[in-house]
Image (cartoon, rainbow, N blue to C red; front, side):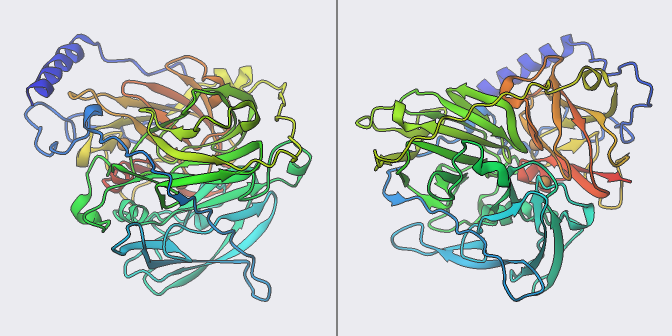
Length: 502
Ligand code: C2O
Ligand code: CU
Ligand code: CU
């Protein structure tokens, strides 16, 4: 406590010394603040520290236990298309039982099963009808994270499906091939439902993929990896007892719902589609042999060019696709995907069939610059300020109100959103910022162009305390969309706003 107090006083002095940042830029369009904020209504001052017990600062985050490598990684089944029905797919949210531990059944939630959900693949350009059904004892919604569908189909908090109810949604995959995902979004219940197991992968696939050198055989050389951390109470995921207002962070790592996983590798070049599916934990992934791998895609599709790297950091809801070339590595050395502390989250077991022909590692360069000069020089027209911690989180000084539209934006017209993560007395914390119904481009971080691995389509972006990130946002469809912090407890605590696209 003493140490914290120290840091706190230090920050206080630091903040007092800072002049308030000026955010306005010359602009032809008036800058919208969504009725910006009465600074003190929700603000933290030092007399208002109650409610901070349980706040996670960096040192409080429990380390993950390394995988013992005992269970083969579960690969979620592919969602099969219905043949003789008037809809294409059916997704049911239901209760289940999962055997995480030898003696003891854990109560979980799943889609069409006990835990997590099947992988749904939409062909680029395809329109499908999905029958969604809620067999839980509480309301839920079905949100297609990253899919650019009209607000009516997007499954935000207003699209509640009551227990026992069934609805039909129409999804059109009118965007580049990408690794997206689906999860529930009922206001104030999202964090709990995801924690208990509701999440699944949603791919947009490209028929040209055969033409590229990218591995694309599901479950063989093209593997989904949903990374999550969980906290158990005995063998139960007792959310109400375990939840933390700053994001429920656990010490147990699960990958695709498998505890202590390992993955048997059969192909020399493997493609992994990594999702940070945690409620709040940020991950930095590395290889245990300090080897390099290739990042090929960000949230919304392929990067302008593949990036050779040693690590990838993903905040909640961000995705990355990577290729690992095992033929360059020593099969006698144990190799695993680790976290930043070096804990093996997914150890590999080698069964590489030497006779398989090695695909040429993917190489492409998109010669059109990721951002045009015109895009870079657009003025800011929407300002967003993220602030607070625990249950005191706000956007532009306000909490979510389903009856309030915070911003309006014209369909098909690009605007620059500037997101500022305003620090507080405690220094502030990282917030992963997400917008529904769009894949955006990062224009700059604190005025600097994004690193190569962020020069690609994004729908979620990690924002450091005191960082200012500019996004180029275009909505191809109409409707009301959420934007929010993807720490799910922050979202449930009202760190969310609405943009109406007309
Ligand atoms: Cu992952 Cu509002 O969504
Ligand atoms: Cu979303
Ligand atoms: Cu947050």
